[in-house]
Picture 1 (tube, rainbow, N blue to C red):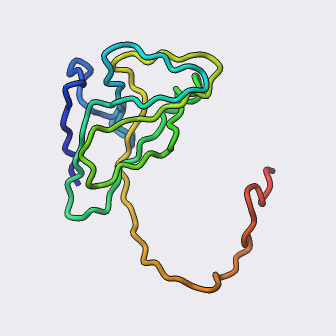
Picture 2: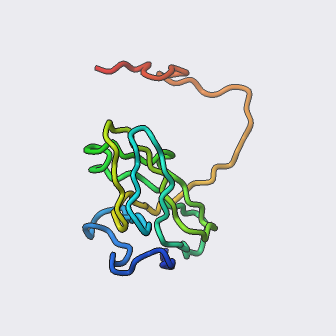
Length: 151
């Protein structure tokens, strides 16, 4: 599997190439490809361009890209990716974008080139769909949220 990357006009090459922060990391850091600072107010969301387009080159279409939050931004500033994980389908060739939500109590300034999210290339499974009248029983059954408790 090869990932082809096209850098768009709004991507400043001085930021460096798309890469992992550390060689063994699963995610590739995505940057804010914006021309000037953007203020993300507490409780607001924004769509931030990442300045790249990609092509997943393989013998099959059994891959997707997932756009995920950066854990430090989530923990310290409350900055999350709204549709986590955001899915980029195999055939999409447009600019990657990140939908950010500021769940913190303070406004957050996004600077041009900031690493704001990460992308992970993942295999996908396309199940065969079979309609049935009943499903097999399990210990959990149809228990709802938190049905197993918290302790």
